[in-house]
Amino acid sequence: MPTGLTQDAGWEIGVSRTIRRPLTAVWEFIVGPEGIALWLGIDGPLPTEKGAPYRTADGLGGELRSYRPGDRVRLTYGTSTVQVAVTPGSSADRTVLSFHQERLASAEEREERRTYWKNAMDRAEAELT
Image (cartoon, rainbow, N blue to C red; front, side):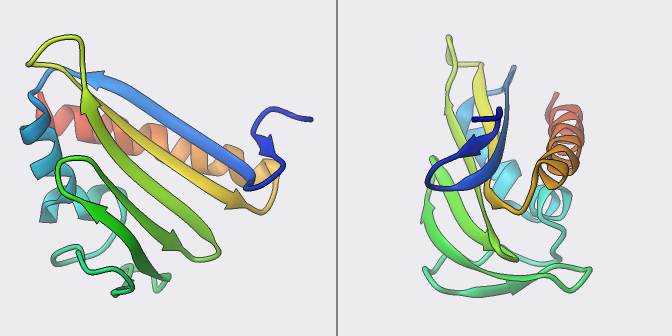
C-alpha cells in the first residue's frame, strides 16, 4: 500500500512539530482568532459545540466533530476530516502541535495538503516564538 493510503481513512497526511512554548499558550493561540484564521481560514471564533457548522473565507463548509479544550479539535473540511492537537513536549516549555487530515481523494491532494499544513505550521511557529 502506498505511503499515506490507509484501509479505513483513504489518503491522509499528518504534520507535527515541537514548539518552544507551554501547552496552554499553544492551545490558546491555535483555537483563538489568529490561529483559526491561519490554519482554517475562517474569521471569528471557532465553534465549540459538536455539529456546529462553519464556513471558510473561500466558501468551504464543514462542521465541528469534537472539541476537547487543551487537547484537540476535530472537524469536517469539505469531504475530509481535520484534527488539530496539542500534546505535552519533553519539558513544560515545549508542546507538540500536530495537524492531521484524512479521507483525502488522491495522492495528489495528499501532497497539496502536506504543503498547506507545513506552511500553516511554519506560520504558527513564527507567531508563537
